[in-house]
Length: 196
Image 1 (cartoon, one colour):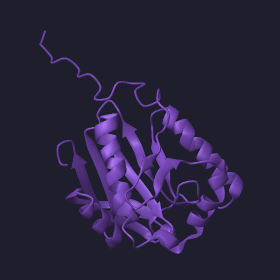
Image 2: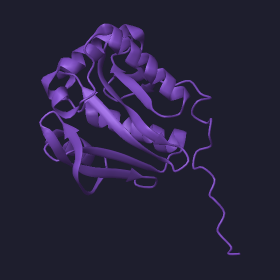
Image 3: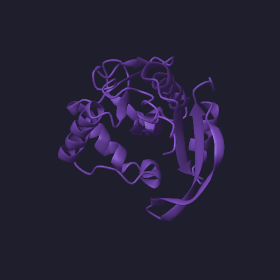
């Protein structure tokens, strides 16, 4: 009989995320990250119709009822500890974007960021601020160890966001993501505990 090392405990204990309410997080620019509300459904529909968002994302919604189901699923996925998705919004106002963690793996301490910014909010550094803020939350508050940010190599705006937010470029994943125009290579960026 061989002496196998013990199976390591989860990086973040099961139930740690689900036991809390999803927080509201402030941004230096005066916007906030808050949980999505059913009243935000039209914003998700608008995002799904935006050509720039559609270029890089395949998960758009076409109708308000579909958007409401997506918002309900966001809340269910929080409780199931699978994702944490926030609306980027003016305090007390309409959402101007989406950001959060998909593919959360509490046992191994990792997650992948997703974000979309609507046209009126683009170009002012909001994406970088939001990426930095949810990164601090994931590492410091939730206790994850490694965060991934992946984007098509053709999406130079996302590459700039990743770099400005401190996510190191680790390599290229060949033919890794299917977009409307076919398979794209992806850049893999990462931020690990201790980088910031």
